[in-house]
Each structure stands twice: as C-alpha cells, then as structure tokens.
Image 1 (tube, rainbow over the protein chains, first blue to last red):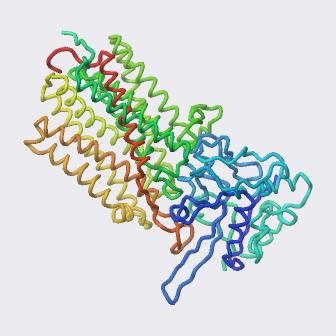
Image 2 (image 1 turned 180 degrees about the horizontal axis):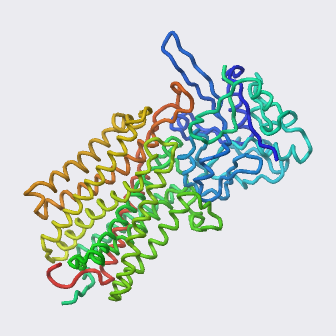
Length: 228
Length: 389
C-alpha cells in the first residue's frame, strides 16, 4: 500500500497563491468576503503563510505553502469523538462530513491550523456550479453528500483524483496529482509515494536536506519542505 | 428527630413572576439557538482562530458547579457530618440540573446539534481514544448515578443513598478530572497542556460549587421565610476558603511550570497580553484575592453576609477562570514556522460577544433556574420546619 506524501521546494515557491485558488476551485471550497477573512471565518484548504525574521533593512521572508500535513500521528484523528476524521490505509487523513458533529475539537488540536469550520450555508451560485469538481458523475462516489454548514473541512490531498487514477491504472505522482501540484507554475510541489524509493518525492528527499513543520510536536507530517 | 422534607409552596405572585421571567429568557435562548442552527455559527463570536466560545465556557463551568456538590455526600457518609443532611436533597437536585445544563451547552455549541446522539454511540461509532468520547461515558453515567442517588434520598432509603452517594461522589471527581483532561492533553495549545489540569478542574469544581451552594441555600432560606444556623454557612465558608487556596496553588504551579520553560510566550500572552485584564482583574482580584480576604478576615469570615459575599465573588471568579483558560488559550497564534507569521495567520484571535451568543448563554442559565425552581415546587427537597439545621 502506498503512503502518499508531498514535497514542497521553498526555493522554487514564488508565493503566487495559484495552489490556494486551484484548491478552492477543485474542491468547491466556499468563497468568503474580506471581512470574513479578517475574522478567520473564510477558509482555505491550502494556505500560503509568510514568516518574517530580522529587522529592516535586513529582513528575510519565507513563503510557506501549507496544505493539511496528513500526519502519520495525526492529533485530529486522536481527538475526533465521532470517527469523522480518520486515516486511510494510504495515509491520507480524510474528513467525513456525514459523521462530523461539529465539536471543533480537531481545530483546537491541529498544530498546523489546517482545519476550518464552515460557519454558514453557502449561497453563491458559483459555489453551486455542478461543472466544478468534485462532481459525482465524473469522479464516482464522493463520500460527502452535499456541503453543509456546521462541519469541519480540510485538505484531502485530492484523494478523489488519486482514487480515480488508481482505478484507471494511471501513474500517481506523474499522470495524476492533486490540483495544487498540477497548477504550481514553478513546479515547487511534488506528490508521490513516500515508501517507493523510485518515486519523485523519495528521490527529491534523498537529494537534499528537508524539514517538516513543527516536528517537535511528534505528529510526523507527510508534507516535507526543501529549504532554500 | 428524623429529618422530614417538604415541597416549596410556590403560590405567591413573586414565584409566578419569577418563573414567567425565566421561561421568557429560556424561550429567547431557544430562539437564539434556532437562529444559530439555521444561519450557522457566523452569528456567534467563534472563528477558526478561537473555535470554542461561550457555550463551551458555560459547559465546563456548569460541570464544575455540578461535580463539586457531591462533596456533601462525602462529608455526610464518610466523615459522618450529619448536619449537612438537611440540604443534601437540594444539593443533589442542583447537581443533576447543572450536569444536564452542561450537556445542553455542549449540544448547543455543536455545528450539527442534531447529531448529538453520535457522542453516545460508545464503542460502536465513537473513537474511544478521544477525550470527548470518554467524557460522554463520564457525563451520562454521572447523570444516571446522581439521579439514582436523588431517588434513593427521596424514597428515604438510607443504605442505598449511602452507596449511591459514594458512587456519585467518586464518579463526579472522575467526571471533572476527565473534563480537565480534554484541555490538559492537548499539546498544541501551550497553556492547556498540563498534567495538572484534571486536578485543577477538580479543585475549581469543589470551590465554585460549594460557593454556589452557600449562595443558593441562603437565598432559598431567605425567600421561603426559614432560618438557618449561622454556623452551618460559616463552616461551609471554611471549606470554600480551603479549596480556593488549593485551586490557587495548582493554578500557579501550572503557570510557573509554563513560565520556567524556555518557550514561555504563551504564558506571557496570558499574563500580559490583550486579555490579561480578564486574568488579573476578574480571576485574580475579584475571584481570588477579595474572597480570600473576606473569608480569612476575623470579622467578615464569621458572618453569614461575609461568607455569602465571598461566595458570590468566587462563583463569578471561577467563571472567568474558565473563560481565561479558553479564550486567551486559543487566541494565542500558533507558530507554524520560525519567525513572525505575517497577516491573519499570525494575528491574535478576536472573540466578540454577539447578541445571539449573549442571549443564548442567558437562556441556558434561565432554563436551569426554571427547572430548579419547578423541582423545588414539585419534589420534597426542602427540610421541614422553621430552622434549617
């Protein structure tokens, strides 16, 4: 069984936010107003943060794209009382909206702020567009019936793409990748099987030093970063 | 002479006015809940930065108020202090109402409250590694054991009430320790993460609930035209003072532990950040220093009025202790990467109290007070006679 992971090359990332937008479009993630964004109610399955250090004129800013880390030891899975968040055999942490009771314990426990609470019923017509993916007709059974307010959402590593790709015998990591990887203009993101020594991710990880975010938490994230 | 109990008369105009007012506020609270349910949590103050708001603060506060009341059972059945027997029925009934209120508050805070039942599908649909699921066992069994205890007391079954009193007491302590573990086991939030949290919660429970009991006993005795022996209230005040000292000790051991670590920014945020006025003003000054001064003062500590005043302050102060745990604890931004995180992801979370959240919270308290008063009217909870011994 593969263990899907992602490698993000910080040297190549230009902070264009294409991954953020592609994720919103791919997964039908609701849009929010600027006010909702400042209130931290608009949400992103993938976000790009900027971390600055130093003082002017010697300032250094790192741009860190942050999807869900799909931790091997995921705190959200441990704390979820309803088994709404669980770890698939391939290591992807998924969120089942039908099971989620909206207790928000996982948001409190996640060290990466990867989880978002859906605070309102989405009304925009764009949000309801059926041609945007994931559409059941094109991607088979999507485990979430319809999106509803009052549940917690997060990045899924676009598992609908991966599952479909596996079913069709395509090569995951090259032919089929998550939307954020596909859209990245500088090729900063690479997706693949961490347990396969010949995969792109394994090759990259063996070629350069890598870090994972907040390793001191012991969560063993499956998203690796190649520092500048 | 064996103690006998009676129902509250509850025929006065004041009684009907009070119940009607409480019912109106409870109904307003229900309407606010329906607004939250239909419109989503956008009408509340919580966000992705501070996911838990007022209902959760109220829930852990009510659980505390409830669990500590069983200390009376411990005093009566183990230490043989029979003088407390006159108020035990009132106390146990209050404990049941409060744990019910806590469960209601948790349900109201859920994004999908209609799936509340999922919390109780223990070992079947639940992840039993979650402290929430473990606490579902604690809360439901606690509710059941306290109810059986009350029934045994109402039926005057001496032996059964002794056994159930002990079961309820032990279970109450476990329940509150479990509630503390919900926070204490979360390593992500620096100020939550502490092995002392369960014990801190137990002491907060004992302190706040005994203080509440003092206030309620004196209030009921005054309203129903009875009299109470001063010694009874004053000796309860002594217990309250002792537990409060223990609580303060545990809180500061926890704070010192967090402060001694190299990474003490989260604690600094609590003590000197934008929410620090809540900590120093309401929790420390109002809820700890002033009550201790009153209770240990040679004059005021030995008067009913002094003990009642200190108890009211403690009941309010422990509420702010709960609030200070959750709001600043969650508002402190997480450091995903070394350096200063720019923009909203590095900003301190804000928590506005919206009208809906305010009236929802008020509605919870009104509902509980209403049930309690109706219970006093319909169940034999009050001791018979002019004097409460």
